[in-house]
Image (cartoon, rainbow, N blue to C red; front, side):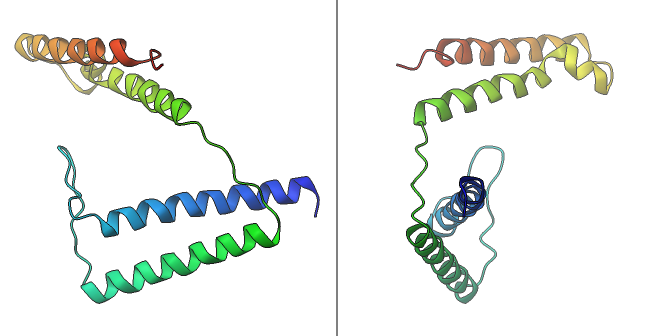
Length: 134
């Protein structure tokens, strides 16, 4: 196989490994509650165990494939990940600006003032952290 084949295989396996690891974490955590969402544990214990077993088997096969094909692990920078997430949050939160919300209908003056304050609070927090990681 040439480098392009190996790069494509690595990319596919990396995606699968990351998603499976995320799901495994959700299935094994006791607290999956956040402010605006939570995961409802609607899996019966047997189904949860079966799913975790399947995840482990697939992760084993990913490991086997990586060893068989001599695929090197991809180094991923936590700093770059943090910068990427914070930058993405900054962009997404532009959607709560009063000017942006007006696209969904007129805001009362009180609502506009409330959202301006909320937006500014987010911007102050993000401005103090984004791009300032050591």
